[in-house]
Length: 94
View 1 (tube, rainbow, N blue to C red):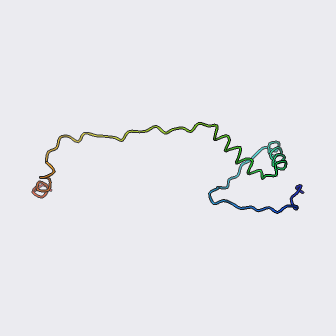
View 2: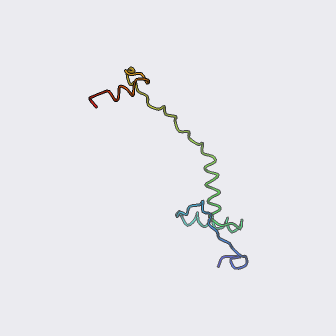
View 3: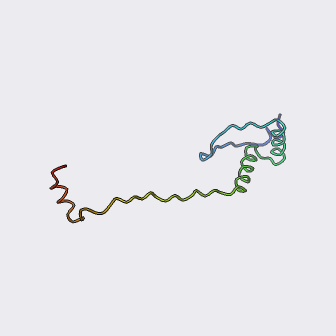
């Protein structure tokens, strides 16, 4: 039986902003994690979250390259804006 398991109340709540996942650890590593968790009176999951946070703080955040919007040359203006409506309705080919 886990030391202190029945002596103190435990409240487990899942924050809705967290996602659950399964991670597999080798037995020796899991044993070390459990020992540290027991010493610090914390859940193993908290140790793992803190370790991942520290790891991500060390990694530089990559900036996405800014891409320019595509442009094109549509040719010269054939009809002025003032005459556009008249030309549109007068064109028999439409």
